[in-house]
Image (cartoon, rainbow, N blue to C red; front, side):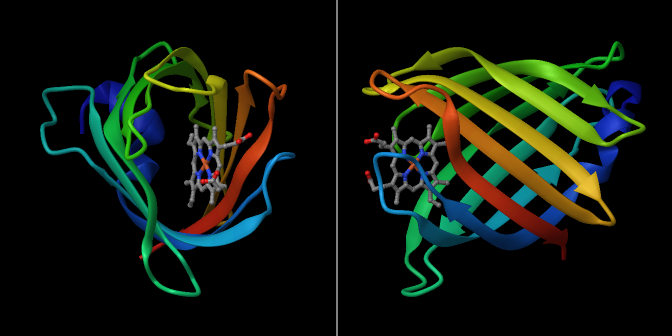
Length: 153
Ligand code: HEM
């Protein structure tokens, strides 16, 4: 494993779990999710990330996204993502290797009709990876849109 990746190395693998979507302007909904992180080249400080979600009711695919997580030795982290909706984002933030907390905030949101800002916070507690995604749109301030809890498979 590349030295810069070690602080978030616990992410490597496949995670599955359940989430809930919400926002002041929509009906809340449940979703199933799988996240995969891989680190194929120990010479490079990069994790390859992919996410897919599906309906717990119909099993049909919902949102998906993929990208690259790029940690640095100083505890900073950059994530570049492409979403199935066409939205692209560059997230910047920090990771705490001891507390196993990752905090990200959008530095760039592109090709989005409504979204202005996105934050993502991940925590590992007792082997469970949980996260909260908040977003701001042109009409709504920063509010939670996604909350999920996943376990490694
Ligand atoms: C609604 C963005 C992730 C499912 C929305 C809306 C936006 C949005 C802008 C419309 C809100 C409004 O009209 O005020 C995003 C962004 C995401 C994300 C930026 C990731 C960072 C997801 C995921 C799922 C999902 C992972 C499903 C697992 C939905 C659903 C709605 C919705 C069902 C309501 C129906 C609809 O408008 O299509 N999302 N979303 N979203 N989102 Fe997301």
